[in-house]
Length: 420
Picture 1 (cartoon, one colour):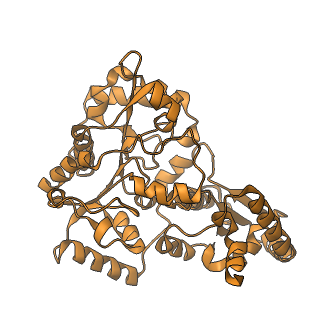
Picture 2 (picture 1 turned 135 degrees about the vertical axis):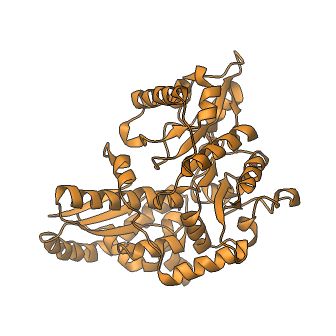
Picture 3 (picture 1 turned 90 degrees about the vertical axis):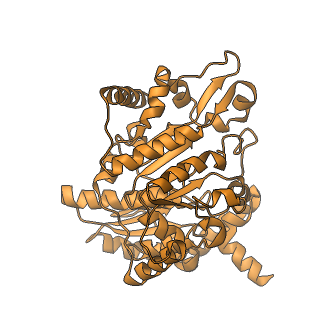
């Protein structure tokens, strides 16, 4: 009982959904840490007169890699940009994650760059959480929203790097997967119900009007793209923290089932940091690759109001068909309705979700492979259609949300150009 109370005191946000208990917990935590935090504020305040101090309070509604990278990696790149281009002094940065780490290998790598406070440093995290923003101490919650943030992202180098020991461990993982021969590989992950059951439903209330499952892609639609990659001498690795089960034997010829057989947190970081590119079917599996400036193919995307971060990424959105007219709705409607494919009322009564086909996925994967190999030939029509799509995005979406370089797959945009 005593151990449970101590754990509740430090982990209360992620252990209870009861609003009254949560308020009581937060108030008790505040009272406990406030005196120590005031002293820390005074010490850091004096320090900040010589070097600014910034406390990044990372989002933690759900423990997700995407929150850490968007909040922390982006902020660190912006600070690097400011230091080089404005001559501003780099602040002393602390990162505070108020929940369990979604990937310990990743957060330990960030801890080598900036002091990172998560469940492994409970007491210090508690002090920093309530440090006051005095003198040149700044507190920032969530990601920066400056308009040119994704341009900065594109021009800055990755923050993370591997140690010699980690490189050796990564090479050992590749030998387990591919044998002694060095292989090119692509990481493939799709949204699966088991992940949402483990993460969203356990860690965060889901609104009754939200349907997380209707827009999930079918893994069978991704088998052909892995077969295509095999013909190009490229291995495909199935990624995923929580997967629904092992792949069928027929799929294993062209798709290595790493997620079911040998997944580890470090393995995820290594493979996603060293693949040729990543294919993400309606999921955020690409974030680690993006943090390493590797390109993403985001397929079965249920929202184009938010883009991926990489300037060379390719996207295929899911389409919406009106049940009343039996016609596809334009891209403008998809942008306006943001999370439409998870809106229970819409998908039950008004629209049908049209998921990406196996052919469409294979086409965009082939396009990405050719672009990386510098074999892609873009037609005048392709350039014109992409320009029209970007102008549409620019007219409807805040600049800070969109990466200027992101494209819709060329064959897909040609096929559905009437939706522009």
